[in-house]
Length: 100
Image 1 (spheres, rainbow, N blue to C red):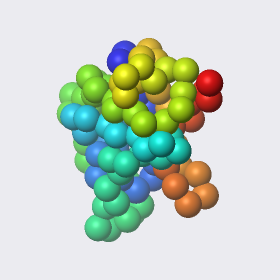
Image 2: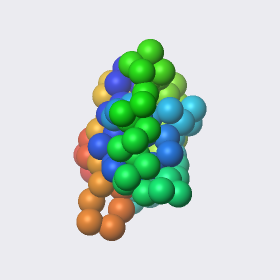
Image 3: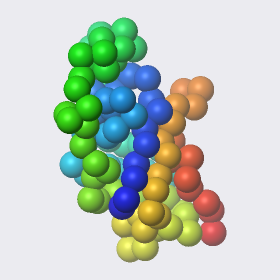
């Protein structure tokens, strides 16, 4: 995985659109199963991003486990070179997913 951009506004792992989780899990519907809401919500997310230095930002995690029907899913591992994860109305999903 070369790049993973996360556009969720309330997740403990998200810091300036970088995911700090070591392993990311996507369920069969392409929803991010790794998302953990912050106790302070979106306001806490904003403060964390203001305080974060750029050298604290990690690269994309090495492993994205995926159970979704997708052309990038090879034996439960995502093979896409880049992934975009973003919030929908009531869930956080992989926007890169392409159904077979």
